[in-house]
Length: 429
Image (cartoon, rainbow, N blue to C red; front, side, top):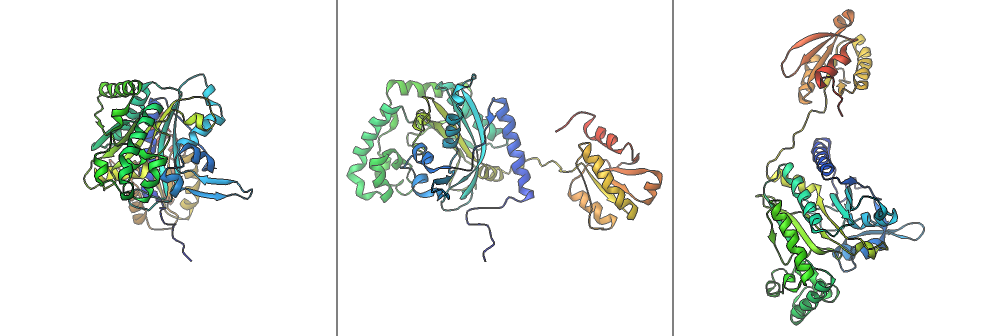
């Protein structure tokens, strides 16, 4: 019997989960500054949502989805990406009727994609993302990009590169589509099977192909920027002007098309230039998707968003040797010596925890020296020592592990005294 985790999945152990918690906490704090609110959606959706929302021609829909039938014969799919789920929730719950527009949402979601597992790319992946629904102002595009860059920078990353492009509106895309078909048709038989199919379904996806990326026709392919109509060109120029205003450097890459069918106008990726990060450098990607809400039955609503992999974020931090500050998980550790102290220790722990103090104790009956070693490993701020002598005096020995100062505190005053020393009498979370 195979009892290992399935291929493409991984356990996040307590020593690593701390880093996830710190990163997620920082991201949430930044989102609050930008007035984004959290949304949570189901782990699986009706398969049609992703077929219509993500696009039948995408690799995600054609090759990577975990799809199954429930007992009622309905086709369901574990979500492979977050935007379609958020868009469905937006329509179903009539968030387009909210007084405050646009609706600015963020999420932490587990995604599922059946692809070849490699470093930083799993079949079960964790993603943070944002969606702004209800505005086609280019300033929103710049704000979304600014939010993503701010997250990376405030977590400590420095080797970052922002790449942007415009995919234009429907008219621009149609003109470009015809130009791509004309360009690649003469070499169709030289392209991979997927690209031969894409040539009619969605020729822009050819530019995103990893198999044919070194084909000479790729280097001479027409640029989408040459096919932008006046409105699309003006929109892209405004986005770039806002990025310049914010002091966010960027590169324009006409071949950046992103892998999902719903993108139009602004598309962007943030990459890591850190040495040793690996061949796949993309950290986050996103763009504008005006028209998606209508495609799934909602009113005309412009939208933009991005997704960033948490696993890849942590990999980039490691590559740049950035250590997330790991605060001690415990305020104090209680050492009890003797049978009477063992019994009273439970009540003391309860009182401390009831006060909001993070506390623990030894449950293995080890000697005092071994218990002190455990306290050191846990990086606690205070060690409490309770023995028969202390019980007789109704006190407990409190040792400050930073100053090594040791004092005796009345058992009745312990919780209040420790709380004041730890938090200065202020409320804490």
